Each structure stands twice: as C-alpha cells, then as structure tokens.
Image (cartoon, rainbow, N blue to C red; front, side, top):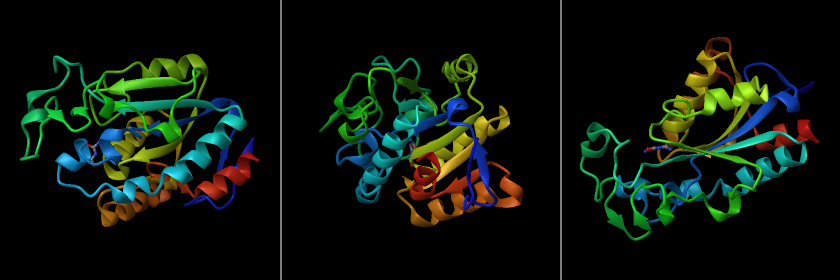
Length: 221
Ligand code: TIU
C-alpha cells in the first residue's frame, strides 16, 4: 500500500496491484484542429499542452505494473449507437459522422478517433470504445475491472468536466476510490476545470481525490 500524502482533500492510499490508470479520450478528435472539439468551436491548444504530463503519468503507471485502460468516445460508422439527440444538438461546424479534415467526426475507424501517438496504447492495454460521456455506460468496463480485481482508479484525460468527471462519478457510485491527476487533465474552459477539481474533492472527497502528476509519480517510484 502506498500513500500520496499531498493528495486533496486528504491522503490517498492505494495498492498499485489493485489500481488502474484510466486515460480518458486522449484522441486526435479532441486535441487536434479539425476534430470534434474544434467543430464545437473550441480552441484545442490547452489540451495539447498536457500531453507531456499525461505521458509521464502513463510511463510511471506502466513501470509500477498498474493496469492501464484507455477510452475513446466514438460511434459506429452507421451511427446506430449515436442518439439523434447527441448528433442534432447545437450548431457545430460539422456533426458527428460528417467528413472532416481528419476523417469522419468521432467515428470508430476514422483517423480522428485514434489516440494521439504520444499516448498510444501498448498491446497489453485495454481500449474501451464508448458512445457516451461516461466510460461505464454501454461498455464492458465494469465487468473488466471486476475481473481484474481493481478497486481504485487513477484518472487522466480530456475534458475534465465532461468525460472525465462523468466517468469519475459513475465509478464513485460503483464503489471505486478515484484520484484525478490535476495536470494530466484539461478543459476547453479554464474556469470549468477549476470548478470540476473543486467539486470532486469537496465535502470530504464526495467524488474523489486530486493530486499532481509529480505527487503520483513520486509515490509510485
Ligand atoms: N465537449 C467536451 O468538452 N467533451 C466531450 O464532448 N467529450 C469528452 O470530454 N471526451
């Protein structure tokens, strides 16, 4: 059992053997021009900036022998798993399934749905494709974690207040202790990120804990 003494709101204790690192949606569609995030009108630059910190965390988790799970938000080419309510909402420059500069927006086998090369999964690592914002909805993630005997989750990913927070809340309700790596997650909206970190750890870690990559890596060393 190891401890991250400086985790907020209080020390986070975990056994790397029963902890998984969950890398949420580090896809070209969210961090590159012409992808889903950009079609929604967002500046993707801040998301690219966290890739080195995310890589450091990923490498430390691998070195510690932790299970590593990657997720991707994407849909089948026929859009049968994309609710019209999701595709039709708002006024994006391109909708899910439309052809864009890095392929069809948010579609499983399109180049834009791929995880960025810096954080590419290794052959032993699981990739969960998910149609929703939360990684437990309509996926095998819950069963996979049960099979692996995982009871703690460390999270990194984009975006903080959308897919990361939704998944942390799903995990928290399923009984997992969850820690979010503060500088390996990012939002298109700085105030939303700050608020998400605060609301996660408020009220005695009502959703979970937060800590920096340096603090997590030091504990794993
Ligand atoms: N729009 C936005 O901030 N995020 C998403 O749509 N998906 C994820 O967070 N992955």
